[in-house]
Image (cartoon, rainbow, N blue to C red):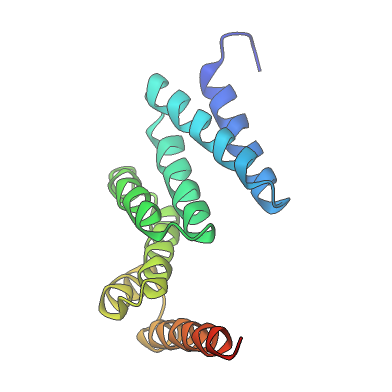
Length: 144
């Protein structure tokens, strides 16, 4: 990377964000992804912007802030579509389906899963599984 290569720095920050997330260092993952997003926007790198918005959405969903996750994922989707990034679009749609399922919004989840390339049966199973997980957590909490 050359000095002044903002796009390269943004992509490096995006990669660091993924590494920190995998390592369980969520504050550093957020920090690096947010930095990557700012850089991508400042240099007009729409592909990196779409990827980072998806990564941030998935990270916020993992941290339990599903509404923020949905907002970020919905912002990622048009970028991915405009760039004909079908694989990225599918990943974002699947992440949206997961976030909606986590919020017990089964119909919205089902609306997104098949669009991601998954089957309706897989989508229904994912929604049911998330519902069962939530019921199990409620049962455990009631027993404590």
